[in-house]
Length: 339
Image (cartoon, rainbow, N blue to C red):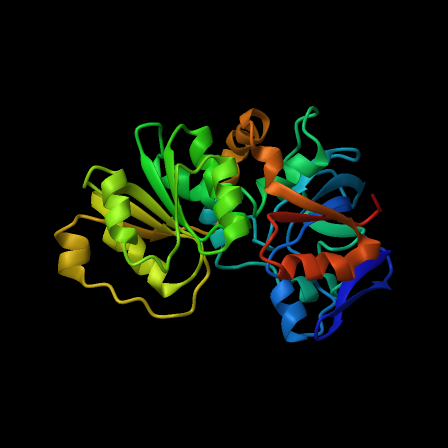
């Protein structure tokens, strides 16, 4: 089978490896769509890698033993390698599993691990079925396009009475607009790139601000009649944006940190938390028990297709990565079997 690889700084290609065989309760899935995510950072940095991609959708084509999936099932391939046995996995919060599989040790190879490949191996319980009327392309949005902000909004119980601010309008932040508008919430977006600003308006944002605007806080307060937003989703991983979320979220409001960041954020307990009564929390993905609900968003949102800006066959992996590096794109999809 063919898989995508990073060959050096700004260079990607394809290599061939054997088709893996399933074992225990794992399934072999033929990958029809692999959404591209943060792998472009390794492409830019020149980190050679033959294990690319953590999300996919496809068709179950082989099983080692009977499981929760059967041959022919159209499935979403959930990320990571959780144990499937702990209390977190049992509740559907598998993404936070503290005892995940060591894939290389389990399979005695890296083959079958990457999603940017023609086949992938996964436990059958991590393969929820795609409704028949949903295409592979749309179903792929149930991963990192819609998933992180969907999970955050589930936790915050975002609804039509709410005003939501989203900082960072990359693919995840743009997915946040779709999720918020589907729930009927009003949306403010903060991003400095013109293409992303325009896309935010297209998806339903009512106010779009540049993070460099010195009056950005006043403009948010004016929009919310002086109260501040009900909830904020920080999707950029930038400290200034994290701080902005805390500053403009109303008293007793909620702030969800979705964007990855290794930087330190200054939070003062009394004025930021106690006196404002804020709830701050991190959100990585959504509970597997909520999979039917995210499919409702995909089937019911009038703007969900606009989250897909580019589709490439595996043979154009170099161009696909170059597109991911560009800021003028939403979700980029890779098709391992061609157009």
